[in-house]
Length: 227
Image (cartoon, rainbow, N blue to C red):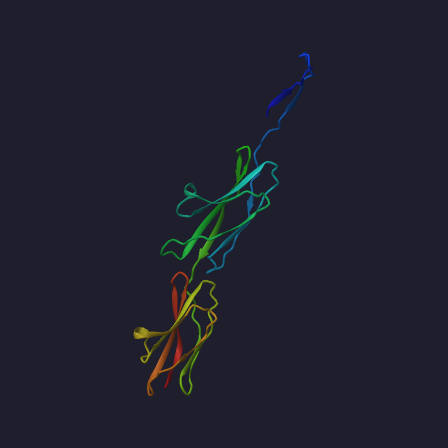
């Protein structure tokens, strides 16, 4: 909040000078921006790959930037990291990709937004907690059918969003402890395998291992068939 005074000096070709009247003006107070409001975020289990933040912000005539900070519950706000800088005032959404700690399957992430103006002021939004969970893949059912030249093994496709791969295991024993992989696929929609080169008179048992992108797995018993 400052007052400024102005006069105009006029000079002719002969070097004569004269001054105008004096006028003044006063700048307004720079009170700083209003804070943004972060909206709640609910992330379903296994949808941890991305978190989309959205917020509202009253209009600021001297807007400079949004600064988005994040931290984990166990590290505390003092260890927050700058996650993004956004220079457009009307850009009020951001997608981030949190990273789990090694060996952890749950994660509590916190976010806060600082709204900055060109005068160097900032206002902090509300803090937002986002809970992320990575569950092991669920079990699926399947069928094992003996055809004339092969055994057909089918299963229901898993619907996990963090799918990694299928691994079809086989053994002539009813326990999977010594089973070996006979088929692998990283395509989630693949649901069938034809097993050739089998020995007559044996019973073959099949299990399906499902892996997610973080290495968790489940083992489903698909059934058996005598060849």
